[in-house]
Image 1 (spheres, one colour):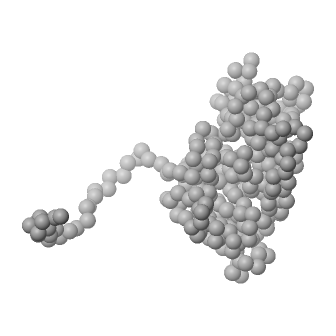
Image 2: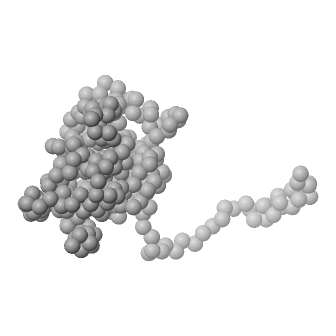
Image 3: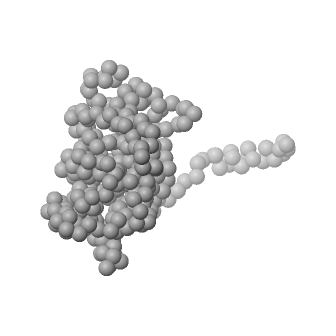
Length: 294
C-alpha cells in the first residue's frame, strides 16, 4: 500500500509540474523511410456485407485489411456509388497476409498494405489425382467489375503517392506470397491494366520473345527456373524436382503473368517471362543466376 505521505508527495510534485505531458524537440532525421514496402491484392470470395463483417468484427480467426473495394450489382452494398472503405490505418498492422514470404521477407503483415476486393470467386480442394501431391483445386473465377477496377487503380495510385518506397515488383497477389494457401485475386485480375497505369510489374514482350525462342530450342534446367522464381521473390528451393512447392509457385506466377494457362507446369513461355522480369527488375540477380548456371 502507498502511504498517505508518499501519495501527498506525489500529488504535490504533480501540482508543481502542472502534470504537463512530456514535451519533445522535433529534429527530423533524413535517415528514415516508410515501414510499408509491399502492397497485397486479395479478393473476398463473399458479398460486401459479409466481407465487411468478417474484416471488421472479432471472430475466432480474426482477419482484416486496410481497404475494402465494393462492386456494382451487389444487393448488400448500401450506397449508390462505389466508395473505398478504409478499415485499418496505413500506420497500423492489418491481419491480411498470414504466413507469407516474398523476396526473403516473412510475416508481411508488418510491412504491407492489404486491399480486399469484393469478388465472389471461390475454389475448393479436389481429391488428389493419379500423381500424389499435385495441388488440385476446382475454381470458379468471376470477372471483375470495370468500375471497381478503376477505383482500385485510383486507390493504389494514392497509396503509392504516400508510400513511394513500394517497388513495382512488390505489388503482389496474395497467391504470390502464400502460393500453397491462396489463389486470390485469381487469373482474371487485370494486372497488365494496372501496369499500364503505372502500377506494379510487367515484362517487356520483346524480351520475353527473345527468351522464349531460346528456351524452346533448349529448355532451361528446372533448378535454374526454380532459382529464377526465387530471385524474383517466390519461396522456392532449387531442388531440380517438379515438387509440390514448385508447382504452387509456378501456378501463382502464371496466374499473375500468364493467366491463360495456370496449370503449375513448367514450360518455355513461363521460363521466358520469369527471365524477362528478372532482366527488367532484377538485373544483378539475373547476372548472378546466369553465372552460376554456366
